[in-house]
Length: 238
Image (cartoon, helix red, strand yellow):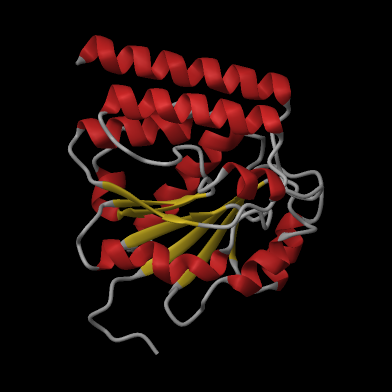
């Protein structure tokens, strides 16, 4: 049982065609510290929403596909409206180890960080053994190196889908102005850093497999270019 003094933690899962993995992801979430789980289905073409409802989760369904960033906007808006103190994003594709949520939120609970990331990158061998495609690994490394240099940080990965935020962070970022595409994740981090919020990370396992969602090579290239553009805008404004 949670103590009354503990923060309200809500897990959000931005879902799209996750019927094969959402149940496993749900069962890994530690229910003793999580108050509520919200699934936002981005107009899936499978039974993701039906399965999520059968698990007793709070489910919202978009009438049309809004994109990865658009999905997160709904997730965070709903979590804040329900009084979350800490919001944890977990992809429902089972690529991330949701059993590590306590370790992810602990630094936020203790006021050491405002944002926590689950980094998949510790060693090259570990990442590649976990199934990350070679082009994704090198793209991840290049973009992370560049982001660290420009932002003055020393994070091991910026491109994870396992994150935790304090409500103050999300309330103070112009989320509606950010992209509805995958670069939304980077716009959050860049803007949060600019506003002085502290970003930390913990290591998490790498899990790539056929059912896990993953953008293809050309979408990855587009994503990389959008990240570069976001960094350019940051430098220009700075």
